[in-house]
Length: 373
Image (cartoon, rainbow, N blue to C red; front, side, top):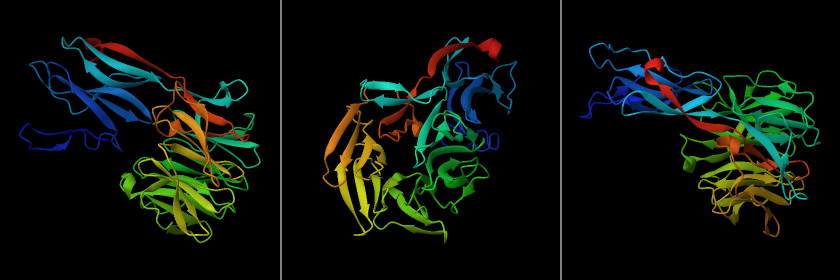
């Protein structure tokens, strides 16, 4: 995101801070009432702060091309709102933190899972002994034993990781990654660490990678220009490095390969339909019509689990692949969810629900304008 400036007659359109932050990530600008300062939010290294640009209004003020940073600290700051008397700036201060919780059917509620880590986007190795997770909010990929021992950090800033998936043999992890100045791509890394390997030439924005049953291929979503209706489901053969599109997958995303390798499940671009591609018949069918997100296969391939967070009554469901029987497992109403990739929802090895719960804080702060500037 970048800030732009234009004259009121529509002329002289230009980027306000060209080359100042690479890549640019600025938004939410407001002038002070007297027009002396332009306040805005700039995000660097995943942390957002309030900055001020001297507009040079008044006798004692000269315009400065270099913005002045007004906030710093462990919190992120957003939405600067100067008061009309010019004495203060109201801002939102946010500390982002998430805890993993598991739905306990016996207790009928959520209990803490893997305490002590702020994490989201979890995946388990097929033997159930290892876990890969993304820390929140810094988006770093880690792996450990399911009891939290033998932790190892696998990615490092400024790369931001998301949606890890263990290979069937438990030796590698494929994940989505973004790096400054590069499009979102899928990458592969050894479970023992090393340099993450990009798997494609990166011609589109790639996401949601998953493994074939034999571990020889990866399926992923490919979106051109961030327009979901342009999305395709691609399959990468890791042996030949050839990429092919699943027939008829235009406008579909969030693919999930079934454990037996016969099917790929995916969502329509409006997240209103759950689609199923049958490799034996080479065609797609509509499995279910319902607003949904984050589909997951059961280990036996008999069910697909998903959430309906966008519905009026958010819940966690599963649908039978053979009989299309829809079951509501629990409500998600009242559960404080985090945003973005961190709104992930999935399954533990025993097929119980795991979800990141937002335990961060948001409060309104006031900055004294004279002391801040």
